[in-house]
Image: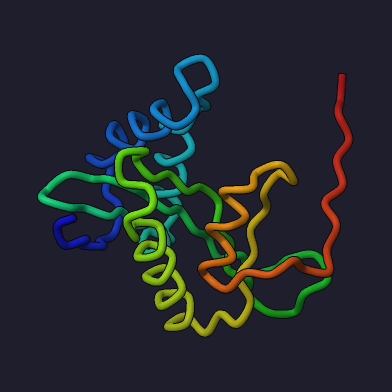
Amino acid sequence: MATITIRTMEERDIPRAVEIETAILGAKRSTTLRGSLTAYLSKGERNASVVAETEGKVVGFLVGDIRAWDFGEDQEIGWIRIVGIDPAYQGHGVGKALGDALMRYFETRGITTVRTTVEWDSGDLIAYFRTLGFERSGFIGLEKRLE
């Protein structure tokens, strides 16, 4: 595979990110990614949203965030919110390169804890985060469905 280049996400990357999500989830399961990415890019933490390019084509993206507060915390916490790797490029180091770049950015901001959430049955996604050094945390996700 060609060289992977990581750069900050820009508005022009949003349509390609939506294509990647659709390739992963299918058109019927695709979310409102366009609106979410627009919101993340407009709120100011632009350097926490990155894309991977190879041969001039965006092949993956990773959206992070920094919260000035988090439940039970007295320091800023880094979060990984959205990840998408073009299925044709999965297993080629794209996700690792994106994750490493985001971790370096968090370190420059003085972040010492990074979190994310995944579903229990997301084996591939859990394996991906383990390659980045993530471990099971002491937190338990709770949920209530509202009718």
